[in-house]
Image (cartoon, rainbow, N blue to C red; front, side):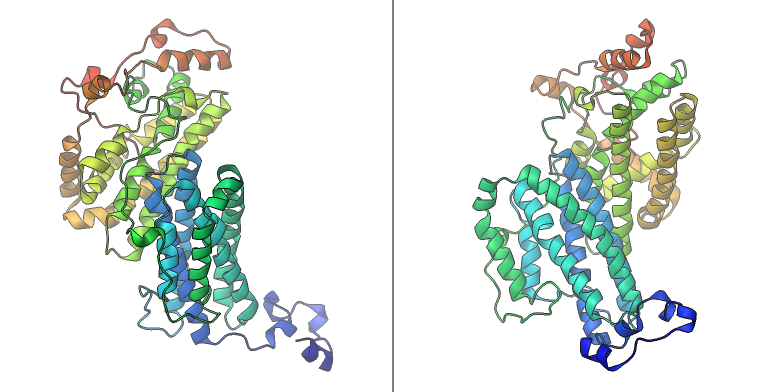
Length: 481
């Protein structure tokens, strides 16, 4: 390019306006760039990498105990899904029927992602994702932007630009996560495996296939044992007493005898407890094969929304100066559904609960309580939570109701599936898992201290439990969505 520039005077535009619609300088545009075939080949590899990353994030979410990683896997899985969808559309525009988007582009590249999928612990998984695969994908996208034609291939350049913005955020998150979770000793212990990952990627010709490709496959390491999804939700040590059912937040929230501000406090609890919804939805996505891609993309969007709702509860408590770690965050909803129902039955329960949130006594009511409470943060959260749930109902109609025939059939089936789910409240006590203590008084007392008010004795003594409402000890609907 330097030789080319030396032979010609700089390109002059009318009155000094940027040339080519501001896309690039003329000097950049005079080099030929990649062919359509070369472009499609690389884009298909990016698509494959993002699709595999999406699956790893979603499939490892449920059994990941660390709260912050559950949230990041929810978020980053959604972002990967969005970019998969964009790349599918772009490849379809580039003279490429049949698209071949479900094909594996290289055997060693498949092994590379199998190895990360099968990482045996959190530290190696985080290293594989954020220390290896995501930086490699980001660098491949940068190379693509440098080498393709900025005008002829402008739609692909735009997709890569947007993907890079979010991948670089993932890399930055990963650097902090690795610094926190993986010390020098752990890095040394996993060095042979990391060397194997690098060997696999090199044998694949790099993530984008621009380097020489090996004829043989690299020997597997962790993935010698095929990955098996773990449906049992795990929580880290900050989640105290997760089997606790000592308080029924729904009964309190919908009792209009209590002040709105106090009910909003219980609503923050409901929001943070929604962590169990991504744990359950991940199991549905992972264990429901052979669906159109849009199914996985939309379901992952909903999964991310539910993770955001949990974050809303965490933020709400932080705004009041209340440590959520003192409160038992029950996880038996996801535990019981994941272990007692089939994937389609779990989806049915999710839709059934969502439909219960659509009437005026559902999400609108929660927004009204939040608005009446005088807490603008809660009002904002419930406003967007309500909007999210309307979207989720539409997602359910597209991907669940269509399997059931009619809306009434779908709701009836979800109701039947929900009645099958049993929580053994007495058994939890007998096995020493919980005492179902009433944690509400201490939370309410601490909130009153923050508000500068005295606790109301009647509110203080609230002690409606799930167990007291159901003689057969089955869990009543928690409306986790």
